[in-house]
Length: 163
Length: 163
DNA sequence: ATTGCTGCAAACGATTTGCATGAGG
DNA sequence: CCTCATGCAAATCGTTTGCAGCAAT
Image (tube, rainbow over all chains, first blue to last red; front, side, top):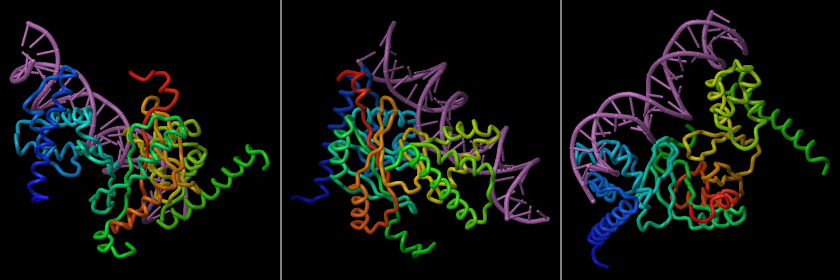
């Protein structure tokens, strides 16, 4: 019950360490090599909150090391997804987004179609549905995607009832 | 309880009539015009089962009238979606798919990542979650997307346990 | 040394738009 | 007649790949 700020910092430090270890093992398993660029991308990715597009992350990485190219970020994210460090968030607007999934409880997003903002929520029923439907149709379900689209409070007030 | 075949035919005939009416009204409301091409695309779209990509529908339309262009099919589908005749099905593989949504009960899809096949299922809880989460966060939810990805029975048998 | 990594530029593929021509109201 | 629809070709935009030189094992 110490200061929340400090806990958060320690959490994310620990998470970064674990992430590095997981990536390292994944690379070793596939006979791939480590690199300074990949490390940098991982550090910066782990510092993000919510979800980032490849472009977003690329911009962040640029401020840290302008020499790193888009392709490197793109390939790093794929790699992170492969070893479970990142998972793709699908907002269905033509851009791929990722968030870090290390020790992250299953959650979903509700997206405002006016402002593009999104909020996270938890809905345990969804996992149950996945299991139930899988059983029912002899499927082995691996994952699901679920998003709600609508209008957030702020945007609803801006545009009163009828457009 | 008459022959199912006949019922289906009559259902789809009636559905086509209603669809034409809805489209007509939608066009009138927006000051748009009718056209033979749009009618043709609608007829063929209403005959489809499951979901079609723009490309799929374009191919179907081609066999009926080779003069109709891709763009026309593309724009017709957007129009159908606008007036609620079609809704987009999102499999997240980079292609937009549509299915007709006229008098269609809410349903979802489970997609096999091996063979690309999909099955429809009903899960009423999903709508409930949408409402509940909306209320909880002062959102006005309009729609949602939900898909389950996994491996179907047939593909699981082809590739026994470990790849 | 060998093999993977990087970053650029170019390829890709589905979607979307500009425009001249043709049809509907 | 005026406006919208059509169909072609070209533009778009995010994603993905080929390749020459660099870095890690």
